[in-house]
Length: 177
Image (cartoon, rainbow, N blue to C red; front, side, top):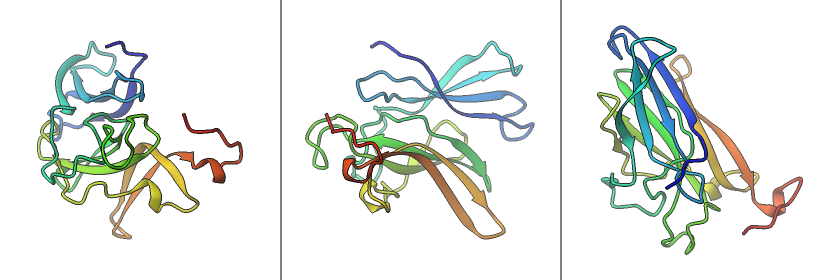
């Protein structure tokens, strides 16, 4: 598969959390949907060189919920954040051509949540997707490039993302493929 670039999701550096290494989570699009597996690269210095460590979430990882309709193990640039002793990943993904959309064309992109103790082996939440494309107002069809922020004072988890509007709600409608 060809890669049309790299999308940086997160850069982390902490003496305890990353043991002083620089961690870079990247996604490299490998399909027509502009999605790919989430990979972790590490370096001793911020300017590198970076070396591949592991796939954090990829198409070989099957969610423990049995609900694989929301993603196909491919993700659109998504942020990993360390909070309260765990790595959290709110991943934007589209399905693989199952029940939501019979064609794997990235029209419907949703957000799932996964956690990890080590930043490498993530477990997806049983309730995935935690944010569905059709629950937004005004209506969108894609919740892409998701990022997360934890507000401990307000006890909030804030997820923000890029929007691809439903054609009828778009200021500049673009027909679906």
